[in-house]
Image (cartoon, rainbow, N blue to C red; front, side, top):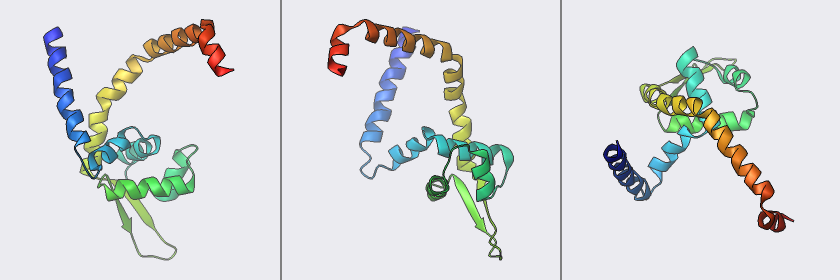
Length: 145
């Protein structure tokens, strides 16, 4: 087990180096979708509900502003994770759909989500222990005052 873990850690160094060597930041920008609340929300909705209009997406994404949703949709479309179809009608009708690449991203995120969900109690305990230690540490209190 230790050997496998060490091999994975070494393998991850190669990934990190590849991300760092990307002069244009493309790989880091795509990776940012994986950690972005609105990007993942849009991908999940389109992946599970099918095509949706802007207003339908906004109603499902509690707290998203129109500006943020528009920005998120443009970024996802630019990166090929969703498609936009404008029917050129009046009143305007535009629908968004997930692409095959967007579906693949969702599928590949599932192990991470599963780990986060199954580790939630661990994270709560770690946060509680950290917060308690911070409350008991006079040097930290002094820095905050």
